[in-house]
Length: 274
Image (cartoon, rainbow, N blue to C red; front, side):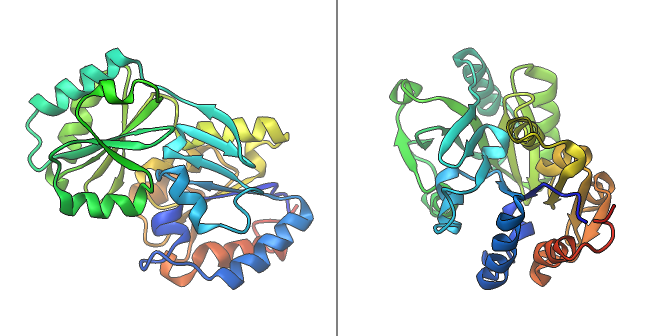
């Protein structure tokens, strides 16, 4: 008998292969079996909610999303949680980004209604970002987003400067925490509003303990949920620090590792047995 009551998956590099696709027929078979057994399915990603639900059009209203690295939690189309930076913290972070030594730094601000970029940003990079942010608007100043809740900065810069930038954020800002998903990408979030926090909120709502959660991840922004969950799997393609945070290892994202493990769980194979 399986002891899993919730399955949470990171998306890029984990659930999706390197072509940003997944085996829909194989997943649907797993999902229908999970649904029949009352096992909750959660998508936990740093990406925008509007982008995430586009990958699951048939079931988006049936599942939960821990979007924006935990800043926005949606359960069956209902908002459960939405974080928010103070204007003071936003201004302080912008001052650090503008005055620090971070060559080739580009960033967007992410909010409930949309993501935003200041006019004049590199259009080639914006084309890439629109794959991750289906709502992305140009602004001239923060006054243009006065009616929205801003809860994340999405940064991109040279890998050589990721660690110095993250160290500067930790040293200078109590109101922002830095997490990296690799490839020069760094997200600044409200401290504590990470994926693990999102799973805790959903677990409380559904009466599910951490020990009953199966999670998959491949990046630094997955560390909290991997460390706290009873069945945590790092992907074979994950860096060593992520593997060290997990209890088990799954085959790579290109080998449909998430689906392989979910099938093992549904079949009641070790380690998913009492």
